[in-house]
Image (cartoon, rainbow, N blue to C red; front, top):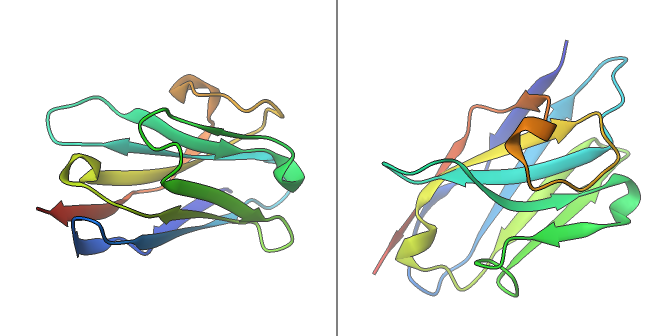
Length: 124
């Protein structure tokens, strides 16, 4: 059974930073690609960033490029998202997702297992 658990959300003022973590327990599954998505109230879930096994490839949404950094520790089956220079537009529930595919996809349907989400709230 696969279990995906996010942590690290919270409330910050604009310009501040947060660090998110995602612990994946995957048993016999191989889940080489891990990503972050977010969903703001009234909006669809959108891609934020993804990383493949060994950090070979990292892909970011244009809206977070240069501000957010994704990283991973494959030995610990953990993926991180560092959020810097946050703005109110970054307020959302952030979800970790993992995929059996080796490809760094921006598409929600390419991810097989999801966490419950962690809330990030940025005040102006």
